[in-house]
Length: 96
Image (tube, rainbow, N blue to C red; front, side):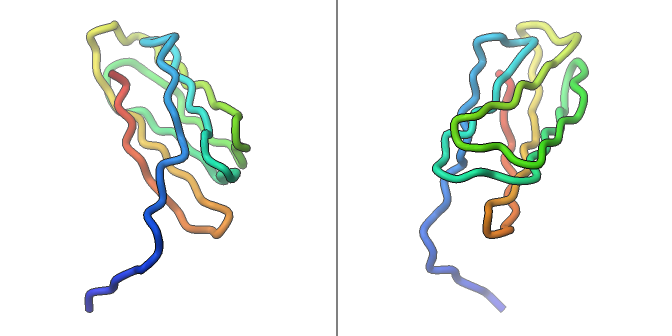
């Protein structure tokens, strides 16, 4: 059965600060609400330890360090979080 949802689209509540790339990326919560159960999983060249935080308040950031990757290397980070409603979201963030 096909299900339709009449709710408004939900914008990804994050901005990526790449000032420190390729070694550091800051995930900033630019949304109006806190996000819960935030996890970051790196896929690609180099190594980045998995990160998890219980809550990321609006205006706060989470720093992701990537070791062993050069300027020309690519990769992605899978960002997973829950809204205060408990709804879970995934976002694929490019490191380039």
